[in-house]
Amino acid sequence: MRFLRVVVIIGVVLAALLAGVDRWAVGYAENRLADRIQARQGLAGSTEVEIHGFPFLTQALSRELDRVDIDLKGVEATADGRKTRLSELGATFHGVKLNGDYTGGTAERAEGTALITYADLTAASQTGATLTYGGAPGKVKVTATVELLGKSLTHSVVSTVSLVDAEGGQGGKLVRVRADEVPGGGVPAVEKLVRKKTDFDRRLDDGLPAGLQLTALTSDEAGVHLTLGGSDVVLAGS
Image (cartoon, rainbow, N blue to C red; front, side):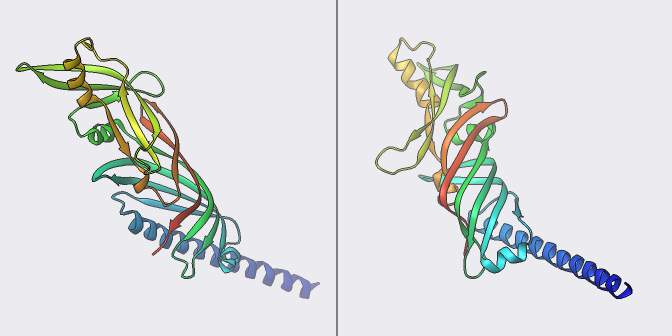
């Protein structure tokens, strides 16, 4: 009985040591992967990574991770020389196959969400217009000042923010903001001036992890919420 008790105690100690080593290893891997994603995406904000599944070392040896969650802050998407900041981007990667040097991998599929605040959407307009919540999902309020016959006229319009296919055979999606109606729209010159300030498109695909695409969007008081998804998504790499 004493021998069995010793064996059990040794087994418990070894199990605790192995569990501790496994948790240390997963923590180290999460930090390395976060640094790699930070560098790859050129992020101004922070990066957090969580690797799921136990034991981690078994997954690492097989070079396959069941699930990896990432939380990014301050993502800058650049397209056509224009930057659009995503305040938050969170994504879950499933079936991640690690590359040879363990610096990243490719996921079989991934899904996530992102947020563009109204302050960032205002900056993205690049027209001097101010954007706020439009009072209903998918709506934004756009306020702009135009010059007409030497006078400054300020107009506020309710616009629809939507996701549309990029034109010109480029592929991908555009975030489009279009005024539903323009006050004084009966005068073509006035409507043209207002829409020049209030209507715009922005492409975001170039700032997302390769393979992750925009699939839907809506808006609320916090900003514009994007839904993301894709297959063969690059998690990180050299």
